[in-house]
Amino acid sequence: MKPVVLRLSNPKVAALVVDVPAMQRWEILRRSASPMTVDQLAALGRAPREAIQAMLDRLVDAGFAVRIRATAARRSIAYRSVSEKVVIEYDKESASELAVVWASTRANAEYAREVTDRARAVPAIRTKLLHWMDGVSLCALTREDRREVAQLLSDAWLQIAAIGKRAQERAQTADSPETRGPTHDYLIQVVLQPLDEPELPMPELTLWSTPGAARHVERQVASPATVLGPRELEVARRLAAGESRTKLAASLNLSAHTVTTMTKRIYAKLRIHSRAELAARMMKG
Image (cartoon, rainbow, N blue to C red):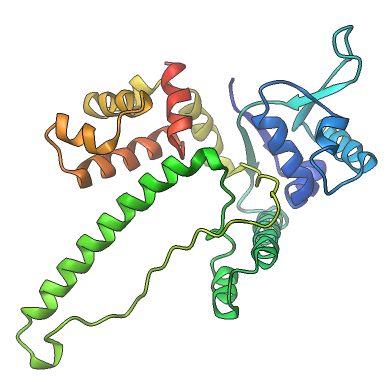
């Protein structure tokens, strides 16, 4: 499905991108394999049916969602996302549109902090860090993501350990007695904290300034074969088929670091963020 471009100059779009609860419902529609009714969305909790209906009406009016008439098989009106991918285009020369972009970032950051507070897992000093990072340090994951999370953490640990080893070697071989021996300026800690209650997904919105939005859409619909090099295409196909990075590195006579770097480059070129997205793009050709 081709990405749909909505413009932030539309007041209805601007009002929705800062409304986290409404965009979370849109995200549920975007991920759903079939259209959903108001009652189905209301069953997910945290909002009465009337509020859900109002959110859906706004999503339809702004172009985020499509209303589907009732049928004999489905007696209620249903809703679906207008596309699997929605790009929000804004004018970076417009102060008002830039203000909405920042407001959207702050709204998502505030929601992330609320989730963190409910999980009761972050001390005050780390709450300040979350505020400084504008919310990008927290994401909600499902149980089905655990294998990918484990792989990402494993790859990250190997890279961090390699950097630490090189830093230690440099410090130990330094000429100056004052710098001999490892020094530590940063502590990296990753904590996976189960949430007390299920959280609705964060909206997967892409915001692009006007000159880059069209190019971004073109990249989204481009075939992987036209975007990736021959070696990258081979790696992408095998990753999409479920082959582990360790096995892939051994069979191609590459280091694990090289495979990780290639994977990041493939994700960047295809504008994706997970193996599931990669598999979907490779299936589409």
